[in-house]
Length: 304
Image (cartoon, rainbow, N blue to C red; front, side, top):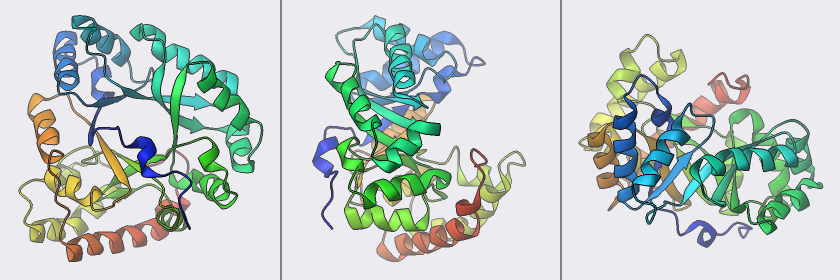
């Protein structure tokens, strides 16, 4: 079936989007965070941020103020349970940065608002009204295994495209945070994807061995290791980027870092992407389908 959310709607996004979660880490000196933020901005790509990421917006404001002729386009995480809450959260994000509106709002829907979206209700008029008010240009919908049913119902009713231009969710070799049935429907409808969490929070070695890492990730890292070793990739970042850009629907990958060398690697790997060999790619897909049935589909909200 033809997509109701064609890729051209998000075609202006950069392949790499700088994630700002680490900018909110108060254990890192403020000026060091401003420096990495400014470096990401000067690289010319998009950024992804939220007022919920500690003092990340204050860091970004300081970075913006170094040169306000170069204000990046950005995706802002917004929500939650009503249109009025969304309006207020938009303001909580744009006002600290002294900007008039956001390019893309990442809709994180809960409660009555999520149910209204599922049913094609009045929220469509209300949220599209925020576009007309000049507060936001576009929306993408944030997805998880536990809210995949909402998106399935909206797609079946041909409602999703009335509001959002694509879906955004964790997508890397170890995490595919939509259920199998939604994943299949996303491909059937050719829905544009923004893939979050480029390297799943760290190196494959760290994920295997870190006792603080979630058990499900440690197990997956062990299963992924021989596939990575056969891939011919020089780094975990290369492997992850080549995996997600093996899907034609993936427009961008969002990766966070506070280190200049990691930023440079993300930029390098996304500058001229070559997908993984098909057998390697298909083997990862097989693991993800099994992991989704075994673990993800029954996961409690916010447990992953």
